Length: 155
Image (tube, rainbow, N blue to C red; front, side, top):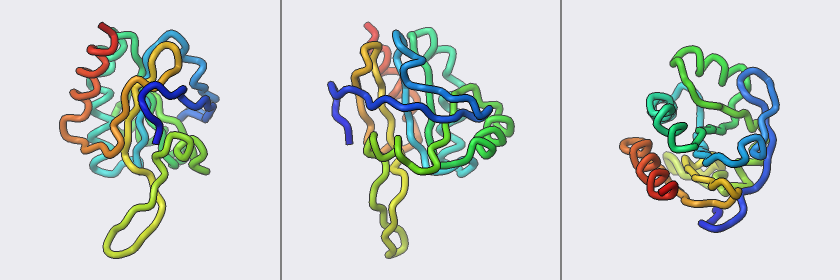
C-alpha cells in the first residue's frame, strides 16, 4: 500500500464512454481516488452515490472523484445511468492500477482465500503526491471523512 508523501503512480484507463482518462489529465486538482470491488453491489452503490451527492462540494475544494474497479466500461455505464452518478468510473479489468496502489489483496471469505479489491481511498494532491490514505474503508461515514480530510489538506 502506498504511503502519505509517495508519488501517485501514473495511469491511463478507459471510462464508461470508452474514453481514455489519465491521472495527468487532472494536474492542479486534488484527486479522490477510490478502489471498490463491484458495480451495483450494496456497499459500492452507497459509496458511489455518496460521492456523487457531494461532488459539487468536492469540486468547490478543487477536487475530483475517480472510482476504479475491475468492471467493464459497459458495466460502469449501466451503473452510472442506473444511479445517476456524477463521478468518473474507470475500468481496470487486468487490475494493473489496482495492484500499483496496493488495493489488490488476499482476502478470506467463508474459509476460502482469493485475491480481490480491498476497498481503499487515496487523496492525491496537486503535485501528484499521496496526501492521505484509507486502506480498509467502511462505507458508512466515509464520504464525510474524505471531505473533512480534503478541507484540512486544502486549507
